[in-house]
Image (cartoon, rainbow over all chains, first blue to last red; front, top):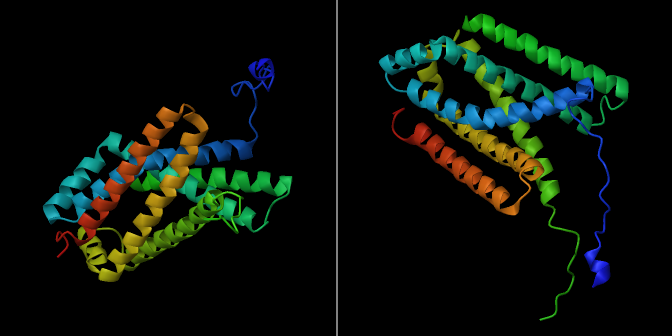
Length: 132
Length: 120
């Protein structure tokens, strides 16, 4: 009984302040993969379904939805979601490549992380140009 | 009754999730390319092109496969997030229940949109 009262794992100090650690780029790409996925689930899916519902009706409904999504705030949301989709897609392709043991060494992994990060931003910029 | 040939190595949930996440991702990537190609073929996105694209029965089926992949993919991802951050069992159960309810509702909404008569 006395033995069971003692904790099996001794509490040890953890020096893991996420804000103090300088994250390497692959770590940033990884957490953005998760954050963009959460964003696509929370806002992306319902907005996608709602938009399709609104745009498949009459030509007037289409025009009204265009107006709604043409609002500057709506455009910002669309841009954010476009970036989330692009980053999530590209980071996913990087994952699939690594599943095939392609680009597994540290230098390649860092390079591909940079490509994913920059390419998603560049393509999002193209979307922004198209939106405005 | 004697339990025989019972392999005690878990239920392979992790392996299944891993595979589902990748197959659904590939399906969604291919659908994205298909939609982009169709929009290019129609010469851009306007009301007529949109109606024509969704007026095609095969495209509606492809959209359904895409949405089912998306919802299943979202389930695996959100469940992973919930397991990482929602530690109390009650909270985790509540989050997962709400997420499942939402995803099932989205599936129903998808079917309603694609075959609910709006496109006929």
